[in-house]
Image (tube, rainbow, N blue to C red; front, side, top):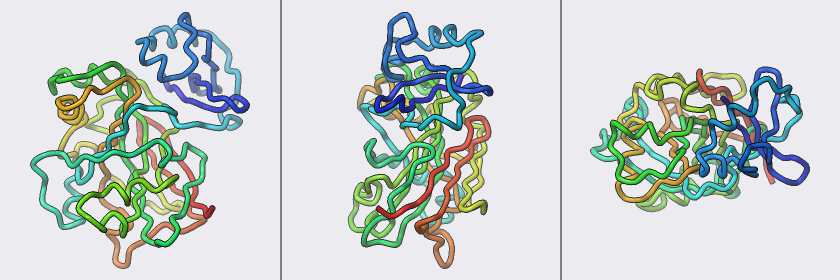
Length: 282
């Protein structure tokens, strides 16, 4: 099942994306949940699945305006230096522990949106990433059980302003420019997404393939990251963990292939779909 948040007038609702269109689910479930985060908090994915059986779509997919998959997550954690090929590309050492930083919802745009070209910097980079969406509270969970706490997966562009990222020992300034990243287009539930350790990720800029890698190249798997983060904080339903980016980022080319206004960024993961947005000036 693919679940998306999208605008209904000025309000954000949610629904299931099918091959034939989008079935609106806002207020239709027994618990009358109004947001996708509330569905996860109520452990109501089963009710959502039952609610779409035999139901005709309410909207064509190309007519809806997507919101972030979870518009108001409590936490978004990002993991850097987590693909071996990317670590080699950047000249880093393989880390002993995950490199983790936080991002905030306002730093992302949804599928079909426009990323904001940073002011005062040209070092604007793309990083396609498979992203874990937590389905139920997780604290001190083992790696063996960690994926049981995952509702599904989505796609991210951890857009980076590289010169700001390097201004100090903490990367947060370069990772939290407003509207510099992408999330979406929907959440593919874990039962349909397949093995998170065997997904193929491809990033295209204006149709040119820049990144192509497999999550099999991750240093720290999705299960390891859920377990590790849950050891120091409770992961809540709707929280997200971006899992790192493969080689082929803009800074890895000589000269770097930075993003510029007008560029179209597409990130495809074979079992999850394609996330697309454009770079614009504001």
